[in-house]
Image (tube, rainbow, N blue to C red):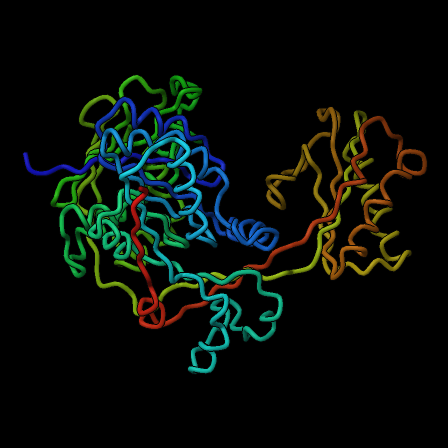
Length: 457
């Protein structure tokens, strides 16, 4: 048997539980644990953290993650790859150094990758004639430029591989693609060429299957989910990757959950718009000929993935202030709960006009009827409904205007339809975030990537 690289999943989002990753570190012989911590909106949360405290801007669970896993880095040679640098990779590195020193752990190297943050380079890019139009609406960025909160470009896996070549035991990046954390160590370990499209695509699928932690191991499974064992102790997936790009997905012995073709197929389809053209900074992957086979209990072989040359541009995601949200909610009980809620909706909407509340958008939903299914919800027999909650939200330009909505709800208790329920009309307002996507020539970004590896003494 040739070389096999073993990678465990560590986290699927900022706030995901760390215990299954610690279990992998303790009960398996993986070489790497890789974390995807950045959902699209996470950067906005982190930017607000940094605005309050310039030393922050990275997921706060970095501290606990490192306290739990640094002993395995030191004693077992385990390597950690994570995009938990968020908006501030340098800050995350400083926190790891602080935790390591507090625990008396030295002699490990931490590498950070920067260059994804273009928040301060918008003007420079525009002066070079690079269009930053919204690729979905074709709007010019000048319409929202003054309200930008963050702007980051999705980097690929090559920079992670380079940090490993420079000796890093832990690699911290900012905005890298979800799959890059998993492909990076494979490029490094197998010395895959930058144009070895099929193997790179295989590494992308490794990352895609592992990036959502327990979701590939029976979590969120819509099959016979009732029979998935011990979800309270779910095991995160582990990939055993061969040099040719084929790999086995499994989990640590003794952990709960299930690894099967069916659980992997659900993760396989997650966020895949076109399986023949899964675009990443490293390769355009084609998953249409991929084969998945159950070979043993909790062991699935995956092979036959192909790829083609990477795109000439990289995707940038920017967040901007998009007004404020006001909201109110009231519950009604049987009989005629839905009719009562609908009547109150009409009252509130007329009062929004009556009191000249400047709402840019108004949204109504009925919890227990259509809050999840929206317009696809089928009409129901009200006699079969025990209770319905009416929730109305508005979007406004100012916080004070949004706050006006909540004040309309308490009077409904005495001035509206017969009421036996609960009012949460005094819900606080919150600022809304808009997302702006565009594409930038990759040479404009990749020429600014920097890698810095330092040792904890």
